[in-house]
View (cartoon, rainbow, N blue to C red):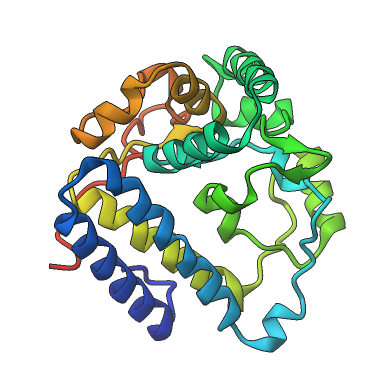
Length: 248
């Protein structure tokens, strides 16, 4: 799949992607589709646990940091809907109302801005609570896939609005990206929405309109264009996952 994957990581991509696609195709009840993908997120834990011990020893990420929760997060529709389901199940009415207000403010702030401009805003994720994720069990795939070996470097990158300092851990990053791409490619191969969306904006839409989930199960675009991840000029298709015939 990826020239930068090791043979082991490439095998993970193929195995996980094929398994997820098979389960999606076998699922007849539309109401069970998101559960298939939420269950697939357990593959991130397995991939992390099986990473080289030396690589895991360098992971600096800890609860209460929250640095990476201040940058734009691009997601596919199923990730938003999984998060929305979790919120609706676990948040009180007062917490839900406050979240919708934060998401609306986020959406207004980022609309019409480039990805770089959004990065410079340093807006905290609308689900960040006391510098920790309030939906950790249902967090997006990108949040599961990025690990750092240096917290101070992360803070410097955030302050500068650029990833000038390399904080990634090769023995961990490739494995997590293999899982993320496998799930997302399987979603695209099954015909579901492959458009990348801004997480905060799409979450606002999902929490205020039940039609988003309906459209997704019908293999339509789940969210309006105003929720899309910002694309680079002249490269509007860069944030779209398309069916490529993998896992056949």
